[in-house]
Length: 361
Image (tube, rainbow, N blue to C red; front, side, top):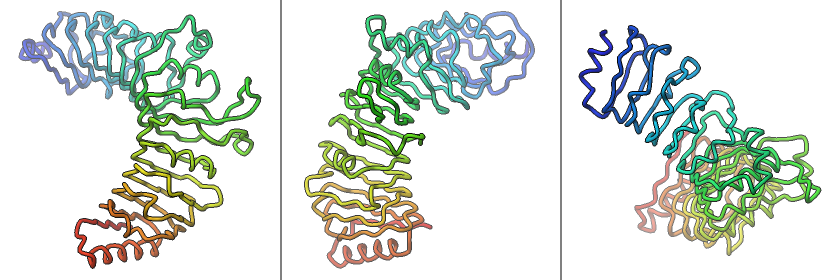
């Protein structure tokens, strides 16, 4: 009974951390006062949750959930935070759950019951997730499907119009991270990107493009984005000039990260009325050779980060950007490093000691 002699020390405390999963068998209940349980579960065949009725935080992300049947977990009705390696079958019983973090290694399916958990706000799948077929079918029958209050969701696959329809039942999304591809729209008779313009509360959007056989035959080359967007990350896209113009006109966009992207013609020409509120710009391994702009195009830019830009040329004077506070160059062409140092010397000569230039290889 070594395990219980140790637990008795904590029975009147609210937080319990278990550092080992090897322990003798036991039968009597414990943890009537425990509010938080973290770490390895002891003895998978015998661990019972029924005495943890007041548990609010359960972190089992380092535990192999396939070994457990979560006996008695249906009584965890006040549970608010759950971190696991897979979605438990008893998920629907956690009616007060607000935070769900799944540290999965392979893509998991989101069951239909998932979106009926009205208090769920924050959901993260480290290995990605996709809507189950039952959820997708229900999403096409709006009269049988209620709106959900999830605010933050990552990372989800959007592969076709039914996935997009399922996404429409998440109108409260503020932060979304997903992997997308082009798909056939049966109503418009064309291939297109998913539509995100209907998410009017969305402030942060991260999209990774998954190449497909029809990538070169997209009738609608512009991703619809809502004007409320503040942060945008795009990875592995072939961006048209029209798409860049749409992004540039987002009125309150503050953060833009382009990673492994290509801009049409490998040239980026910005206009005077674009990116007026942008404060942070990151270009990471982008296939852009010429950046043509004017200092008054980025009047609010405070931080510029360039990573792995080997064939990149800047055709305007960054030193004229009065708001610029930090210029970072990481693993870029030598010419960019020289340019950054010239900007720094220029600013020092003008008495500006605030600009920081960081160069790394």
